[in-house]
Image (tube, rainbow over all chains, first blue to last red; front, side, top):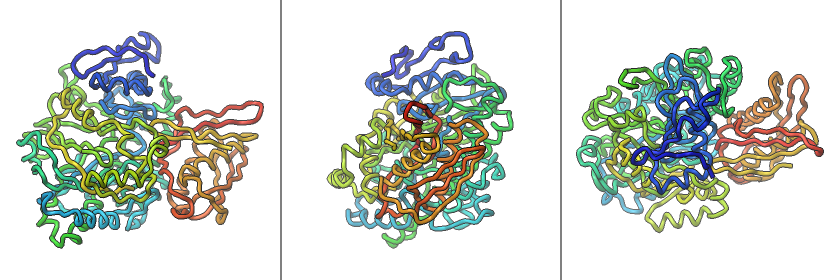
Length: 487
Length: 135
């Protein structure tokens, strides 16, 4: 149980004062830390040591504003999951631990013009089984295509565009992805052979853990105007994809953590936790990491792009209608493990910052040039996956989120270890429980079903309601699953 | 000898050996028991791993386990037996076979070996290692 000071400074806002670690010394907090939470959530947040981690992040050289934690904060390696930290683009540091191992783990939402009435229970079952067949999933899942070294370099440089050029998807898809599915700073020469070797056989695979593919129905619309802009209506069928950069991204993170272990010594940086390893953004190590991280991000966008293609194909195979005719357009694609170089206002001045989002989602308001033209009047779509069997949300970004450098929550947040969950439930029971709620699940393993059982997570609705109440992102629609594919 | 330790979002192992080399072997065995859910692994193939031990023991441990994870991911192999020698460099042999969901069981996909709470301690009985994995 964490017992440090938390001062309420506003609705849904609790602050760890800058003086918490004293006012002198290398391990002092350079800025305050803020946790966005409802009073009810505070207890569970204090239960693991995540607030201490938010305070640790506040000691990083060049951190700007506050060390921030979203309502789904939970303990992570170094940085808490649900953590946001922006550092000065000249004098700050960059940290692989502020991004996480699964670089550009993210979510993509595809809409259709089908409604609940168009799909019988039997059709849902067929669709889920077809998706399970077409999208490789599970521990160590391998993709259906194996790339050579030259091709993997192209994936790392080009991201989703590589996939579209190879016939996986439509040209318009790229307009509806964060960064248009490619961070241009990527430099594949800074990625190890090992990361490429792991990536070669995994582009176009879902993986395991909390990653999933869901057929959902729009259960509720809160904001008609924004929903209309995003092409969303009540009772519509949509598909959500949640996955990241697989072994390729894990390897890139591991490789650079190794480099940064030495960089910390080289640049004489004092840290309260080894896993916060960082390097100055202008150092060779810092710049190389950022460019290699961008490669992993691109890999993840190509990965989700290929999966979208197979989702469309699966719908075509089962329903015998062309994907175009079913209006299977991408609503949007967000990353929730990433560092980005972005322009923000700090003390009334425009500044370039490296914004680390580890288990946090970009939430840009109307008017920002990064938001697709079609959505620019309402703000960027924010996709918040629930966990298996619970609801997911579509939100919109706000200008008020400038307070968090355009960031909001990313999901539910664990409250129970996977082993605990596995002991408490058995996967088949979970499948039956889902079935009784009208959800059909197809998992690579029953133990994954138990580990990822909904009760092992915080309630996603309370997380979303908190960011809504705090104004960081506003609710547009709620989706409920009809069918689930689990790794 | 090893046992599995738990953490909210993650999992780790505590491994014990008479000396550092045996503790490294046990740590590797523990890691694969998490990946496979404890199914028996036969020694049908051998892989040799060589790591320069220029930095501290803790980094050497992370490198050793990370290398095995890499082989696991790329070659789809799981290992149940190890032979480690540590001198100017670490030379390790891993014995195992191709992963089969039916035979070995289905555990957890380990994303990476972490430095968090990483410990290598010595006591009267030998060496104890604590290491956490990101899953």
